[in-house]
Image (tube, rainbow, N blue to C red; front, top):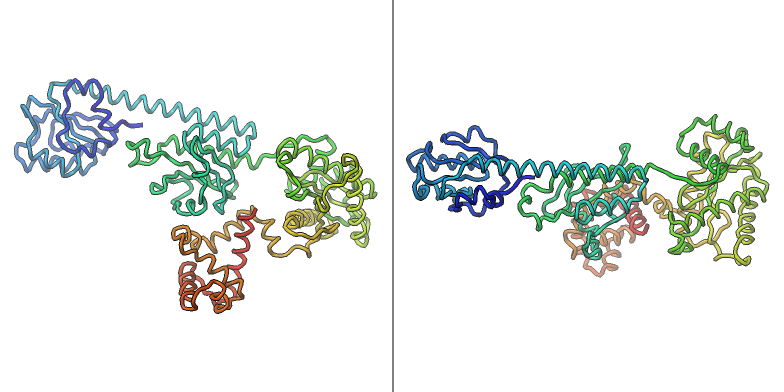
Length: 560
């Protein structure tokens, strides 16, 4: 918002005075916050920094020591520069003592060789500052208007990031808590160069608060989250090389407002869900959502379900989730796209038809962009296994009958997962969540089962299905963050691999050293460094267990 001393010297009223820089040329890029005319030697006590001082010198001290003290006081208070009009006190040049003192303090000292009305300089500079402030206000208003529109439209994260980059004219990246890129916009730069080694680069950005700027890395950042749950970070690379005048103060207020407003839009968008299904399906989804999110009292859910002909009271309830395996979805069927939505609606119809064919009662609807959920209402707990087998078989037949030409898709293309059976509507949420977790984890397995249950899901699968959970990512950062940062700063060392080898060898140091092709002393020294960096005892079973789980979680996050 503020001009530099160099820019002020280029203004017509100043150029009319024939400016000549006699000291402090290295400080010409200092920002000028205000202009102040003064003819008294103790003016520094009235200043607060950033002022350009104008004087004729008539009130300045007559001795060299006094002039040096005058310059020193101005430099101490942080003025941007000193303009001295020649002719009244100093006929042809300012005193050498004054020049030497200004040069030592890197304070721009400028002689005006011709008489210049100071009021014209003041008006020109202040007009420049006010115009810049008005432009900043207009830009800020545009930012708020643009992101308000995006919030109302329910824009996707990629569009929010793109708009932020357009408004800023800089690359913008959205990452999760594990430093994985969720969306990016290179703003005309090379995306490959921007994203190369991103995790290591991101870890070198030292956060100092929810919003901040790392001058060494050149990134402005802010945390993304809502309702006390942070789930990512938005970063904007500020082109300091293009704006050297503002570099000492960091990015402008406008850019800070922009990135924070974009982060708010992203957080709000994550809370918004839209649906375009039929009325009956909407009611089914409303009830399933109410069970999952506690948005309605359980008694009301049971009442409305009974009105739909699906009694839930005094029934044995089983949560079921059906989803496609990831390797079956092609580019045209990407989740969230028109083809993907149509494909998911077809699956929801197939699930509803399978419930009817198997003569089962229950609620069924899409849960999100990837899965269809159902709550089966059985009369007796003893019929649970038979009912699930009948449902899976009916779904297989429905999908075969509705496939073009009756041709079945790849074996195991659809996953059917079930949670533990429960006896009350209040517990149905737990069964449905468990089914969704099992379905997500089953995607990593190679077994082809008619119905997947929790006993078939190991720790690696459990961590995989929790990979987007901020609390799991926070756990990984807490356990391994210092070591990952160390490896990012020392790419040739890579101590994470040493830790992995040690834990995978059952904490057998000799076997791990041999596997790593290192001498035992060298391997032991690496383990000692890991212990110091992470502040853990690698001989402790508890510490190693936490680290091993964190490594598995890190793999799940990176593979996700």
